[in-house]
Image (cartoon, rainbow, N blue to C red; front, side, top):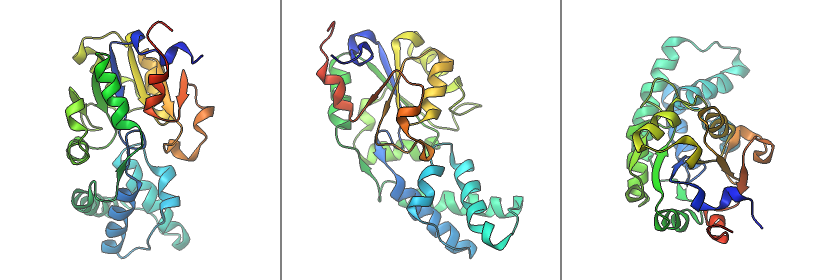
Length: 233
């Protein structure tokens, strides 16, 4: 029998992460970063290098990439270089957003399941809101969510609990009955601090670390794993 955390009758709402949880956006990141680095006259970067940098917001991603490509030259990342990189990245990501990405298997069916069980759904991501909403729309997922909050929606991002606490307030649900569904320690730490139960997917990014080592209430291979448990089972 699956753990009780998989029983959707225990929840009134679900807060769901975006990158690495619903959509595989690594290709978008690599494409936008490649264009940014080329514009700055810097070496390119591989998907394998980018993957563990994803999930902590655009500022962290750009800083990490610049540090990586500058390391062999012993050059120091300056504020001026970061500002140029930031402007370039924002421009290029807006153009490639959704073009090199794909919805993970089972996500759409899982969202349909959540909706059929009466759960209110919110998407909380560290991706900027202006990138998150068009991506969800491009992938046909926007209609599932009552609200979408990006990394710029609040003063602090995940793993701080603020985005989850504020979302529960918006939905009018108690954290104890609001499931956090994500792919990384960022999601788990935010959920623990907010008082939300948390389940992680096995196929996400998680900063290059094994997701099963993260303190969470459960781990799933697909959103549809929730469908294997009947209410009250």
